[in-house]
Length: 148
Image (tube, rainbow, N blue to C red; front, top):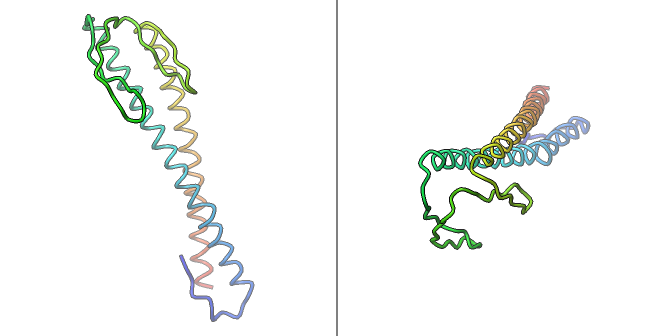
């Protein structure tokens, strides 16, 4: 929001308006974008873990002898592979660490991970609400200053 305050003789008024504009542009807008990106990543992560949980439950129920999958070789390169032992799974638990566990054990790990992601989403929701509230207050201040 830009005001036409070049003709205003009141320097304090101009400084207050500039202060609010700078705060909104340099602090609140980038923070809102950053928090939204983090929340979107958390949502995507939660969806991936939920899909994995569904697939594992399906494998427990159907008990296949082998699975045909695409293995990630890195840099978006995949190769078709056959998994002969479907009783165990390697889970990426973060920071480059993997844990090998049974399918049943993996469901417990997935539940813990999903719970952690949900908690993180709640915290980011609160931060998003605070930032949106600050933006609303700054917008209200703009409106009050423009009517002065």
